[in-house]
Length: 296
Image (cartoon, rainbow, N blue to C red):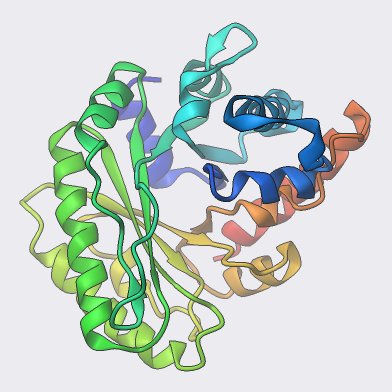
């Protein structure tokens, strides 16, 4: 797939974006959930080898290339690895799946009810490498913890600032100002978040598009104005800690949003499953998430 084909697939495809981008801090937990105990690896290299083996098994599963997965978000070490003798990006594209790369370097300490991204000092080199490896887009995460207008505005401003830098490098930025689903005042905060997002979208250079990755809103259809904005390629939803069933139930009430789930996609996979069992469990999750993504 060339860039125009990948753009068209993300913009109009029926399906969802898989999130396979657990990084250093979340990898041990992801491995334990998969059935790999801490005693089975020692040091970062062995840890990442274990998670790469899991991701490779997911990517090479027949159901993963069924056409219901439009894109996949990777961690840098996954991008750097190989799947069945191909670069991971090429392995995805050969299955009709558009590759994205996680580019943030983690979260800063909470301030004004939010966690902004840490300084992205490695970003220029990572963008250059990502372009060379044939990636289509990027993803970067901030977290809003409570309804604090200053914190929300700061998070969104940083996302758009870095997003423009990414777009200038030739990649599609996926902005992710996550709103913590456990926040007691999330509905009011999402009103502020939408207003800040719309300001950022309106300020983009003419013809520039971005993607948005957002928590499934309290109020169904809340993000419709962003979904319909001419500068938005696609709006995807994170599962945010919901189970697969709950995430899909909430997502189906939001026409125009499609899934970009990690936990909701992978939560029932185990290393000890036979290939048939593994493919059956993964295929069931893919079907369920795709159906919720196409419900609107």
